Image (cartoon, rainbow, N blue to C red):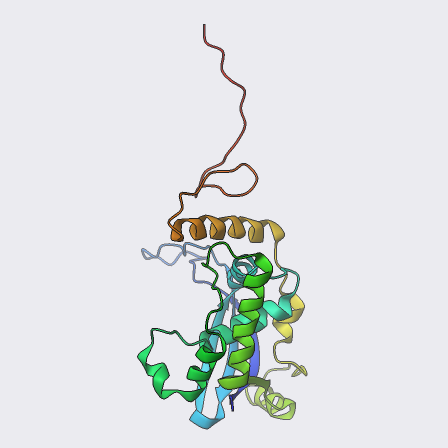
Length: 223
């Protein structure tokens, strides 16, 4: 049976960047204060707090990598939260974890994001099958009881009202830019072609080399 992990809260912040004069040589973050979420969780059996940081861009990448609907934020968030519990087949410690072993057994033979020649629908189904196996055999994420979450907010002096779903801040605010998702999809397609040891062929409407444009210009007349 999967272990219970309680979800307590979700908080929006941003990646580090000096927004004011720090009077020190602190370079700005390469992403420039990109949105980042923290999902606060608690594992009762291990008495362990889990702070799961989720860059907003991670949702864009998962939509691009697995052909997931960029407007389906609940599914994208579900994938992002359960992904860390997908065991690696090369990890020797999975042999001592019955749940991990069952996940590997249930998902054996499924294509990955980098498997070439796989239709988008099959790649998407494989991703969701791995998440379903994690939920069944490894980790079951459930909201912590609302009264306890309300008590915790009161204890820290917050006037927030505990929502019925602690992930509500993400679900109500997160929206994906289709242009950014499409750009990441093209990048994934390029990397996938490289990984398959097949020379990527630049195309105007789809596959493009990194940091370049494939444009159309008039032929220059030479005298």
